[in-house]
Length: 372
Image (cartoon, rainbow, N blue to C red):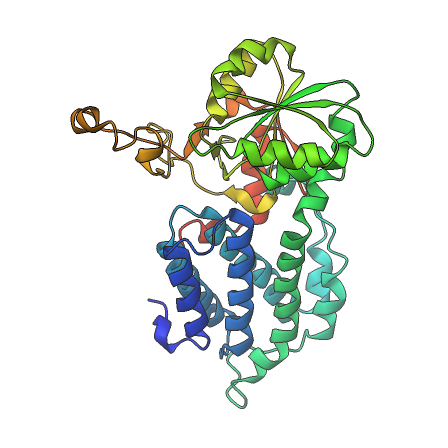
């Protein structure tokens, strides 16, 4: 059993964020992730612990509380998992002797199969050498472990925060390699990642974007307006004409709410329509998303194709009095798009096919944290 939330230093900040998530005052994957990192930084900076397991129990309890407040915002749990992964790495470096850290860089075929390609770890070596004398559960000075480790932990959390703050720039830095002159691009909804990606490509290429309206929320209107203001040739079309115009489209670019462990994704309603039409016309489907949206889950209501439901009155208003009494109106906010419909994911850590998403998840999160 982990510690009770009210016994954790900084629990008021946790409760405040949980209330905001529950009331939908924090909306959007990146905003929720940023708020979560800031709360975790506050909790870790004020936490008292004499070994790393106590700190992990504290963070897991905070993560569980935030994830329960808004289960449909998966980036909250993902961010907690990423912070836990970084903290474990730093703690292992801090408590091992320098000779042990050098053996960590030995890479074998078996490790490659299990963990994927090695990451550059130049920054972690000097840190571990600097604080290799830390002792857990020191009877003479129980707070010495926390006092010595906290500066390194703050740095590890800051790395996660920096990654979130620069995610749009890092996803869109290679946009010119994916979009070519005179191409026709189709997108749907208003994804800020896709918007940054398209605007970045516009500095180097002249191309045309077709934006689907994305009814009944009509978020495509905002996307079309933003792209047009940036000087990109933009057309707004109704969702019903996606299949008809797909033969003229060179590429479909989608945003994602969450990327699942099987390579599928949860995206705004209408994405499944666009991806299926693209497959029928052999048009490549590209998904732009930050790596913080990688979710170590397999089955998120795939059969229903929706995680969340919007206001049904925007589909069928109450003014249709007699009809409303006789039907159940469902307005799903998200679609589930299977991995077989996606060609490539463009993330802030490079381009990846759907088949390698499981490897990315294994590198980014620890297996122990899949269930918070």
